[in-house]
Image (cartoon, rainbow, N blue to C red):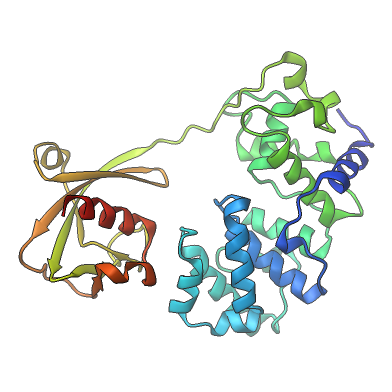
Length: 330
């Protein structure tokens, strides 16, 4: 499947079909590096259409690594509210601090240095290298993975593992337009080689695609076990104030406001007549009992929040879902 024309085909398609995105604007190199860094953090596990308004507001209010390093955490979280996975925002600030301290305020361009930044893994490092610095490398995100799975007709679990897919990445070759090229490949995955109903007639790689020849576009997913866990949330309300706690107990939503919670046995959950709510968080299915309490629980890091001030507070959607469930029954 080695085809020297593949980069030309992909870039020709990209030049005529790429989306206009705020982090793709023609700006100075310094701004490009910052825009790429912020957008890549936001795009981790979040769709482009969701990220766009957050990104535009974020870079307007926090326009540089310096301002990011110095921003108050409450303001940072307010700008991030609704994007979820709040550890990304904290890591973004930690990375900015490290960039100022260890790299003279400049975003490093080598993989070895980028990987040292909090929240930056293999994909993000390579995305920054290619997009911000035009270094010849192809980042392997979900879009690129999907193209490879269909092009090579990969169906088995061992075939679709990260390590296996990395051995196929050379299929794309490289281009002197490395920044555009890595974005072009990901763009094809996002707009053409979609998870469902791929638009094969518009794909520049259709002649190379085994899945098209077999007319079979179903994708095999990496098997991930979804764990079901049971919790009891204590709902204490005084006048119009709800009691929350800054979470230092569970790995999920670290340091974010949640209702006081404890993990319980399945039997307690099943045999309780209390109101219940199911919330899926990452690879965990959470089944939560909502226990109204007349006495405030004895806890540290208490937070009192007025119901009518909910929109102005920095609260994860997880907590808001419980709030809304409670409100329906009041």
